[in-house]
Structures are given as structure tokens and as C-alpha cells.
Image (cartoon, rainbow, N blue to C red; front, side, top):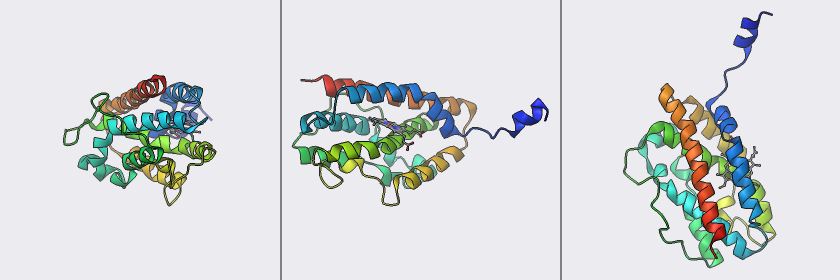
Length: 204
Ligand code: HEM
């Protein structure tokens, strides 16, 4: 087989595969930062984790109401988890954090397509790792009905819910510039969550 045939035989990498590779290090760094804070030792520490989640989800909440994005991604508004996080905070007796900083996205604003898709990839993907976190939360007596509602999987299963999302994300037509913006958006989202982790876990 010639080199040219071999190269053309390599299936083209999907956008979500490129996103996963491009953000691997950022995910590792975030994962370490969160787990180093031992968020599952007691409910107080877990409350800090939920506060981080609240700040992150509030930051891009406006995207779940965006009609242009909703036309491209299946059940976008149904994927929103901020309400569950608010209920988890209430279950834990924690007040909803008051506006510590201005959200990155605002309802009604025109959004840049590539950038927003990168942010949504990160927030949706975070629900995959949530399967593990839900198991840790169970040790604190919390579950999908109390305190850990936002970590629950979708009724049809996490895997299928994720694949429906990634298939749609992979098929959106984008210009080269928008394609780069997807990665930049995902990078920005990971950086933002990291900052929220710092904020939530270092406040005493
Ligand atoms: C808010 C914080 C977090 C964000 C934003 C986040 C983001 C993501 C993203 C985007 C993916 C999808 C990767 C892909 O397949 O393309 C993912 C998967 C995953 N995350 Fe996280 N993550 C977070 C916290 C964590 C933590 C704390 C853990 C550690 C237990 C974790 C463990 C995992 C695992 C194991 C997967 C892969 C699951 C699978 O492939 O079935 N994540 N996460």
C-alpha cells in the first residue's frame, strides 16, 4: 500500500475527537484541582463543589435559551442543569451565591457560533464524569433526589444522551475560523471553571 493510500484510508477525525484531545490537559488540571480539595469528605466540602458548579452553569446559562443553538443541538433547553444545582444548594442549606462576577453570556445577546459550541461541549461533557461523582456523593448520603440532583444521568442513559449531542455537534457546518473558535471556546470554558474552583475551594 502506498503512503498516499494509507493516509487517505485514515478516517477523518471528528470535531469532538479534536476537542477531547485539545482539552485533555485542561481537564486533567481541573480534575486534579477539584479532587485535591477533597470535595467528597463531608457535606461542607461538597457544598463548595456545588457552588463551583453553580458559578460555572450560571456563567453560560444563557446559551441554553439561544434559539440558533437550539436549532442545531437536540434538546438543548432540556440539557440545562442550573435548576437542579439550585435545588441541590437548597437541599444542603447553602444560599445561592450572589453575583460574584458577571456571567460570560447574557440572555438575548447574539453569540458567536464556534465559541458557544466549544463552551457547550465542556458543560455537556462534564456530565460524563458526573457518573463517578454521584457514587462519591452517595457516601455522604446524597443522591439524584437530594443534594446531588445535578449529577444524575439522563433517563435514556448518559452514553446515549452524550452521543446524541456529539453527533449533532460534529455535523454543524463551520468555517475554518469558527472551527478554531470551537477549540478556543472550550479552552476558555475550562479556564473559567478552574477559576471558579479556585474561588469556591479557597473561600473560608
Ligand atoms: C466541572 C468540572 C468538570 C468539567 C467541566 C469536565 C469536563 C469533561 C468533558 C468535556 C468530558 C468529555 C470528554 C470527551 O469524551 O470528549 C469529560 C469526561 C470525563 N470526566 Fe470530566 N469534567 C469535570 C469534572 C470531572 C471530575 C472532577 C472528574 C473526576 C472524577 C471527571 C472525570 C471524567 C471522566 C472519567 C470522563 C470520561 C467519562 C467517559 O468517557 O465515560 N470530570 N469531562
